[in-house]
Length: 313
Image 1 (cartoon, rainbow, N blue to C red):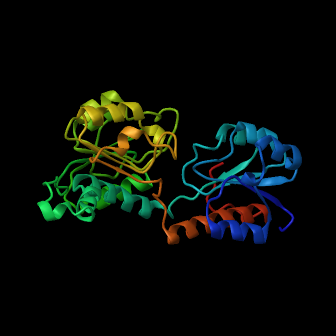
Image 2 (image 1 turned 45 degrees about the horizontal axis):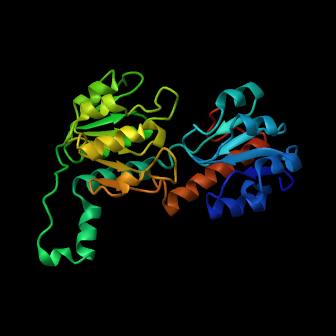
Image 3 (image 1 turned 60 degrees about the horizontal axis):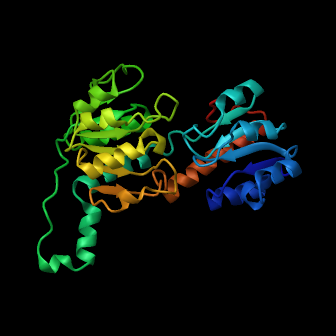
């Protein structure tokens, strides 16, 4: 397989990059001055693309690589891959589900606790020496708060299970009501937001879920409500979120993702009731290795004509 051309779309993981280099003929997209330069020189050499949540395989790339057979994504999300075009051209697509579920769910709970208990602000309070001048202000309890989850898939369910450990009533919204769950289902996000104190975004990004957190939802959640986003930045109408936080129409936010990463609105940087993370939901050594092994396993399965480990298309 050393002669099979594989395109890595962006720097992702040192272990993954090293193993791809050992097993395949690896091309690093960022080594070339422009995409056009790369496509001009190597369009017929690439049989596989390894993408991520930042750069996947859009229509332009798919059209420019006529020999492409598979896109193996180092991510569970598929919003950076043109799935329709892949299906039309018979290109296989895989992702990395399950292995990152626990880490992302852990981080969602960490964001909830950090936002309600002002953990980051408290840390700064100690480091600045302010504690010597008086106690830190009182914060907000998490145990018993009602938690609404948008998307009760693998990650949403794992978040719900953890929140139950804090005696939190759980409700959710998804495309359809889930059988076999005791959680309260709401047919719209506005209804969900009206009936919870903490609203967690855990759904896939699709055209339908883009800006699923909008002004109406934020107003329904209210000035004591908190938004937690461990999905994708485009799930949230960022200008509306910023204005609601600045005006006090929303109580707080814990965000691991943003609309235009790595750019974050300046207004958010000045707010103490917001916790900001650099898209690290799956960012542990253990999980990133598991994700890399899934990418590698899917590629090897494809080129050995074996069943894919985690097929999407």
